[in-house]
Length: 539
Image (cartoon, rainbow, N blue to C red):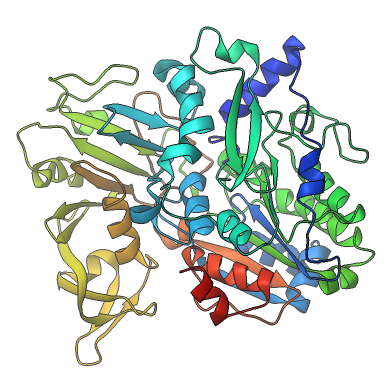
């Protein structure tokens, strides 16, 4: 997310720009290598991942006739308002689900912040300046730039870039933080970062054929008609730069078969002002129309490409300061020895917190008490939505404030809309489930796909831990985690944060399920134009 996962990279690149440090020469071969080998007449797929895009803003803007590009795509294509995101609703984990087609229990990226039991340390990909300073710039940069794609993202699980390369197709990523592919690239690390840290001057990574990652990897440097005005665009992270790069690829006939573009600016607006963010969407609409016109006309764009626009997560309106919007987790767990940000885990540490805005992981490091005891300390707070933890093959969920409980496990006679089977006991209303034993059916209410999502989060990495979520209007906090009083927040699993828009234009093919985790095979079919035969080749 622009205000979180890229804040550190932006700060690094800003210092680089101010200091006047030299950047490594761009790899001009990227632009040639990425060009589709299937010919210019084959339809390309452009996926525009827009951080925190919400359907409410699109609907309001279309109704007011202020979004001509969105209106064109809606009228000529498919418009869904209920694409189910991944959980936690944090971009780094969501993108991992999109690009691998798996939930965190398989792709192994649990969130923006999590605790590694093997390394006995907090993994933070860049939440806020206070946490980064306390944790240390070196480990945060190393996790975000090197380990995230190099080892944290399950090496045995292929990304869409790797699968397309195996099938003989070209792909590209513009500023996607999850980018692992089969082509070698070099990230140029400015000198101020690698002295006295352990980061080298250059880092070799594997990505798609075309890889842009801000100023660290910019093959467009020196190319004409790619915007460079403004700090964000000079650093390679702004919308103007991203759209300019796409238009350049279109006009020069160098589009890859599949292009992923990450667009972060709306997230910053919503974190500050709260949802739905119509003003930011109006600006996005103008940039989107310019992209369509780069083909010659919007109509011609849909003849030559499939345009996909999606949000990654929604936002919940956080109550303003003075209305107790911040849930102080260390205060709720005052009877335990909670690790302070920046401290090393020791034999005395009982609890470690990893806060992802409106959700958090709470790790039990041998306090001598069971997870249920920790859950009891948390659930007494009425602003807590629910607390969940593993009990062997079961998952137990307790509702904040009331203490009502539910437990469930995979397998059984209840089948949901995604053909997943479950056994549910105790109070199904805790997760707003509707079950019908006679029909063997299970329906979701306020929490879409919550059984699978919660299970995936609780099996996403090693350790004894609980998942905690906040009720709408509130967010969880550690001593230095960023908060957004009066603005917007996400991370949790409710509809407002989990349901996002999906627009698809330029094809009649429809996705089988409206879940982020199911889009990868759909996108591969759009690129290849094939169905079952491709599935068998990827097994």
